[in-house]
Length: 36
Length: 480
Image (cartoon, each protein chain N blue to C red):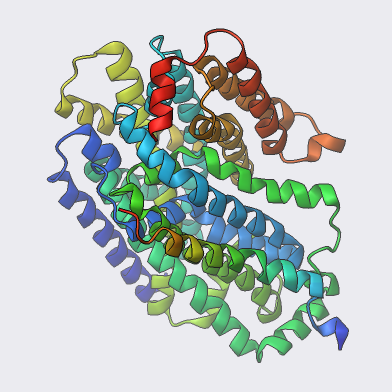
């Protein structure tokens, strides 16, 4: 039932860019872990 | 008025006031009052930046937009998230280091003056002026939001609700200063976060699960399921441009400056971004679930969070959750009042009127400023027909366009000069004001976008003409 789901593009823009910023922030934290 | 809701509200307000009174006795100088003496831990800085940024928009505006229009309202959330990420990634740590090296600057105008060795005070005064004008409007918009909440929840009349809300907020900002504001922001950030997780989950579960929710939304309007429904490229760009505003918001940048040490920035970034993304998802799904859960359409779509809370929970729990809305509004207003008070105490009083003002005197000037500004903002808010969201988007755009490119380039371009900064601030602010007042075609794009672009161009042009950056200025830049 295509009409009963969000479109693929909607899912993509909802679930990719925003969570990706968390992943990138965690990577940044690990890259800078040793700094004092 | 329910006893449970009233009790939870009063308990919450009492706790916030106690924090203000505690920090009243801990505040010794203006740096303590404005920046908490740069002692913020990463998590307090992160949640406090998030809570003071998001305001009632997160619990009233965004769920309301989703409830009224469906998924095509996610673009503003996507744009804001990307903007906040870039701000943490590229601005936070560098600004924290630079503000300390540049004469231990504690405010944005202070930083700009020290960064560009501006002896004329022009840069300080123009930026303090932009702050005062836009924040007074911003604060009054927040007070209107608070008044509507009190009015709807307790059945108070608008004016009484407005003055009660204003009194509480001013009392603890007045007493406790930055540490009180940051700590209450932290608590408010947690409360908002929990409310935004619990409300949509409960609404979706009680509707019968995710597929039932989708079915219910489709019955109302199938276009609500599509993020691109009714959108053009320009309208998507315009909504995503909200993210540009982050680089110039003085109340958010002050959280970066107050970090305990620069190395804490990546930790704060993880906490801040996680909080923001989850809270935005909560707000999006609150509005979306509301479409399916609520039987009759709401008169005011922005009350969807309140309506769901009252429908889903018993009054005692509803009281606590509704206090989260008050939290969101309070945490933004208090931060903005504080930045305004620092602009008056530090940028006008100490810099121009009385250079040898004592630390205690400055704290009191700051406190009196909070009181006076709040009075002006409350008077402006006393008309319940005030267009809250218009004022908020205006102020957000004004700050983003006037300060955003200036802050970024001041951190990354060694040849930038005071002339460039001055021209950028004026160009950005004027572009936003002019663009806002012209309608149709390209002028329907959110004014922050042209403001940001023109400000950047002005900084480049005016930094390349006139006096070049001094050797000392370049040396300081290189040491950061």
